[in-house]
Image 1 (spheres, rainbow, N blue to C red):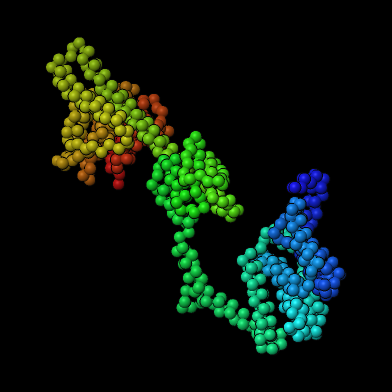
Image 2 (image 1 turned 90 degrees about the vertical axis):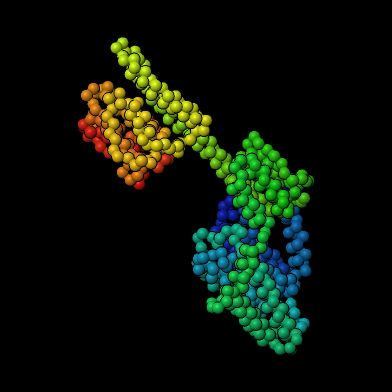
Length: 576
C-alpha cells in the first residue's frame, strides 16, 4: 500500500536536512569513497567490510544524482531496494565489488561534463581516477586471483597511496552553489565509460591469460591499444584536412532519415499553407497523425464548441490539453513517458497553428468589415455631393425669373450625370473595394465637370492636354467634387472668395489643382489633412481622408501645394 503523507512537522524537519545534504554533496561523495576504501582494505567478505560497504551504499544513496534528496520513498521502493541490497551484501565478494566499481565510475564520470567550474570538474576527475585505479589495480586482480599472479607490492601501494587522491578531493574548496543538483548526468557518456572500462579490464585479463605475460604489462598494452583506437576514431570523426569526417557522414545520414515525426511536421507545414479554416486544418492534421505516426490509431479533438474524430478508437486513451485545444489520442498500448512528452509537443504545435489560423480568419473578417466601412464612408460622401447637386438644381428651378430654356438645358445636362453617378454608387455597394480602376477620356470628363460647376462661379483653367489622355474617373470625380464643395462651403463664410480648378498633364498623367483666395488652412488641420479624419468648421476632413486613401491605392497622392492667405491650393497628382 502507498505510504501515508508525512506530517507537516516531519516535512519541516526534513527540508533543512535535505538542504544541508544538497549543500555538502562533495563531502558526501568524499565520505562514501573513504568508507569504500576502508571496506576494500578490510576485505569485502568479512563482517566489518560488509558493514562499511552498507554505510557506503547509504551515503551513495544520499549523493546519487537520479532522485531528489528530499523525496520520500514509498513502501514498494524500499522493499525492492532491500531485496537487491541484502543478498548482494550477504554474498559480497571481489567480483561483485568489481561490477560495483565499474558502475560507480560510470555514474561519477557522467557528471564531469556538467560543470564549467574548474574546482568541481577537478573534484570529479580525481574521484574518477581513484575508482579506475582501484578497479584495475586492486579489484580485478583480486577477483581473478586464481588465474592472475598478484603483485602484493602494487596492491599495498594502491591501498596506501590512493587515499591521497581522496585527501586532495577533501582539500578542494567546496562550491557554495552545490554540484549541479539532481539528474545532472550524461547518460551516454556514462554508458560509454562503463563499456570502455569493461574493455580495458577484460582486455588486460585476456592478454595475461593468452600470452602468459604479467598483468601490469598486459594492462599497459591494452590501455595503449584503446587509446590509439580512440585517437584514430576522434580524428576520423572530425579530421582537420581533406576529408569530411565520420561526424559529417553521420549528420547527413540522420538528416536524410525520414522519421515519422519529421514527415508529420512536413505535412503540418503544407497544411498551414493550404487550409484557411481552423477546423479543417485541425481535422486534416489529426488525420495525418494516424497515417504517419505508427503509435496512433485514432482520436478525438475539440476546439471551443467544435469537435471531431479521426481514425479508429482503441483501448488506451491519453488526453492532451493546450489552451482551447483538447485532443484524445487512442493507442494500442500505453505510451512511455518519452512518447507522452513527444505527443505533448505535437498537440502544442497543433494548438499554436490553430490559434494562428483563428487570428488569420479574424484579420480577414476585419479587413472585409473595414472595406465595407471605407466604401460606406466614401459612398456617404458621394451621396452628399449628389444631394448638393440636386439642391442646386432645385434652387435654380424655384427662381421666379428663371430662364426656362436655360433651366431645361441645365436639367438635360445634369440629370443624366446624376443618374449615372447614382448607378455607380450602387455598383460599389455590390463589391466593397478601395480600388477603382475604371478609366475614361480626360477631355470628356473635364467637359462634364465644367458643365456641372461652371454656373456656381468656379473658374475652369484648361491647359493643352494630350489627345489620348485618360484618367481614373471615380477617383478624379470624387477628388474634384470634394475639393470644389469644400471651397464652395468656404465661400459662404467669405463671399468674395474666388475658386479655380485646373487640369494638366505635366508628365503624360492627369493632375488636377483646386485653388481659392480665402484664408489659409490652420496648422492643426493641415498636419492631419488626408491622413485621418479631422474636425473643422466648414466640413474639411472625412471627405479628403477618403480621397487620400483611394488615391494612395490607385497610385496617386493628395497634397496641399500652397497654403497662405489669398492662395490655398490642393492638388491630386501621380505618386513619383
